[in-house]
Length: 278
Length: 268
Image 1 (cartoon, each protein chain N blue to C red):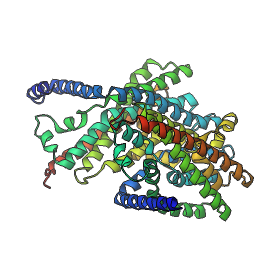
Image 2: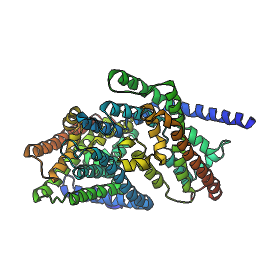
Image 3: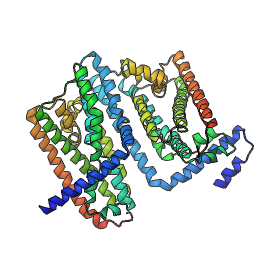
Image 4: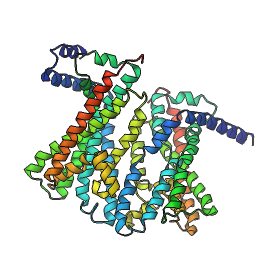
């Protein structure tokens, strides 16, 4: 496995193919690691269902008292938001968190040098090296809930909705990734960040309900300061076919902007990285 | 008599050791306390819903009082040792504890307690401030209420500890008991009043939830301190809670006695 990795690494730098093939090898390697823990994999699947059940029940209680949440969301419409929340929760655990933890550890121990020495873009290595497949169950459960909600709503999203949903979800994923990258980059200056990261992730909890359900101040914060709204509420609106063009452009703009800022910040930090002896 | 004296000495020693450890990790503790934001999210949604009139029997002030009390009390009556205990049994790490001249389950039960005062220091001032600053936020602070509250919290902690322990002890026989503990956590969040006040479930649900053990692990304390539980019902309610504690104590004792015999010290 590692010999093949080295082989790919020695190819000409800078070609997009190389990065794609490298990523494929990373996936294979992560899967091989994961298959060592098969029992954990199965129990994670069971837990994904249990998690989905309590979260859905928690939202459902709101609808015992009011027909709409935030003035216009029905139960199953809100369930789409929750489905996206659970999907991205799984996305974080599968793709983002393992890499985040690895990089913070590298910085702390000074072993980041080994990554910087490789003939590959450091941000690429830092972002996609590990995949924790056992949490894929949450992503599947989230998508399943979205499907069930559409079925219960007798709502067949138009072709536009289906085409735009992946776009909006990609924008959401990019925003999440950017927030993460900024947090990881802070580890260059502050050694033990793991707990701060926990704290900031807890803001993500707000994504489980549509932003309209919050008091106005919270709504503004979640839209403009920490753009959680674009991760769950906006893609749900897209699927339900009630997104406006400005909101759509704003989402794409927010994704591009946050990716740009976080990448610049990462590069700035790397230039000031002085290895373990600092 | 002499036995009791030694038990108290051991309890004191354990508490002192883990108090020192809690101080070591005070920043980590602080962050873990703040990181539990789900109840705040729920409160924000309820507050927006209550702008146009009360929700069930809850006004906006009631929601604030409920969730503020929740933030403090859930930390005081919680233990999350179940996953660790299960892990320790499976990996044979229980051995080190078995060598100590003190029952391992006592150590698990006492270990979280020294972290509690820190939480009181952190949460009580903002709670008092909110009670005085916001007009509609009411707590029942009668001396008698404090006594009932304390009793309910002791029961809640005991029940939380015993339920988790009895699930975790299944690790003596099962390879994967952690998911059971996790599923208990999920049920607990939903049915203990942590996420949503139990009174806001549909009436048919409330009738069942009033009797399930989850209510006695948190909700009863919140009902007492917010004045939602009439005084005449304190004794019967606490009595029911005590019943659950006794039941799970018996289950835990039974499982421990059986389990320790099949324990092979290197995992199942």
